[in-house]
Amino acid sequence: MSEIKKTFLAFIGGSGLYDLPGIENVEEQEIATPFGCPSDKIITGKIEGKPIAFLPRHGKGHRFLPSEVNYRANIYALKKLGVTHIVSVSAVGGLQEKTAPGTAVIPTQIIDKTNGTRQRTFFGNGVVGHVSFADPYCPELQKHIAKACEQEKVTTHLGGALVCIEGPRFSSRAESHSYRREEASIIGMTAMPEAILAREAEIAYATLAFVTDYDCWREETEAVTVEAVMAVLSKNVEASKRIAKAIHKSLPMESSNSIFSAAANSIMTNPSLIPAETKRNLELLYGKYWK
Ligand SMILES: CSC[C@H]1O[C@H](OP(=O)(O)O)[C@H](O)[C@@H]1O
Ligand SMILES: Nc1ncnc2[nH]cnc12
Image 1 (spheres, rainbow, N blue to C red):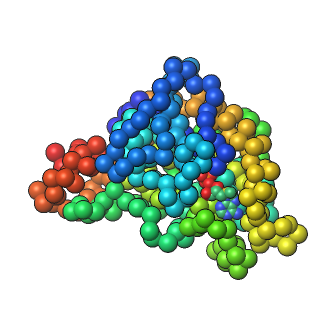
Image 2 (cartoon, protein in one colour):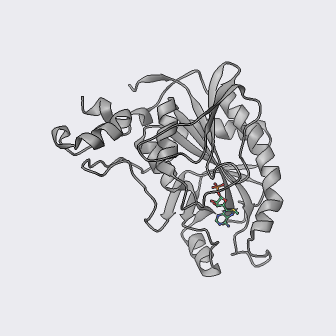
């Protein structure tokens, strides 16, 4: 049986989602991490007595490219605040007819096509660890997201794979068709390494993706542009704000979740051989495993 924790839900806002209205007792927290600075100050507060946090992934004013976001600092900072669950909100392209602009998708799988230059693990520097990632998202949290989408009457698809590209450019037509042959449902630029870092940090994580375009595979539709994305984005963002509140309301005050011990037994290095600085940097995440 996994540990019972007080639920603390955070939202990571994607393109267009730079704040969450309705939070009481708002504080702006500047959190230092061993991995550098998060994308912005983290907003914390309460809604109906339950804690909530919000971090805009690209920073306020959209300053960081998908490849420049400091995913490690973002996840570490949320962990430091005591966050137990993260809902990541993302603008994505639709790769199937049914994942049409304006619909929401709660993906259950990830295909990582990023080029390997993003900092994608908390391990390294003398500590070797491997966590399971067969199911990248928390099914429990996904149920709450699906329920909230239904409540807000947004057409939603639960399931399918999100292909994450490096960007910042959009895909070529050949690439877009190849992702369709791989049976991906949606395409974005930020799912990785955010999802794996959340798992390494033992935080339950799921994505609420909102489709803004059909990328460039669909003959009847113009290839995606920022202009086309922006035209759909504001409506999607309004819906995601309502859904965020409904998810927060639906989560119980306390949670137990196998993801809270996802890194147990994943560290292969003999604790006595882990360099002191690495141990210090990772104490928050893994100190409990090398006591
Ligand atoms: C102009 S859309 C491209 C941009 O939007 C998505 O970001 P996020 O996942 O943070 O909403 C996509 O991944 C790209 O970064
Ligand atoms: N077509 C697309 N490709 C990658 N990321 C996106 N975000 C929104 N639309 C996208």
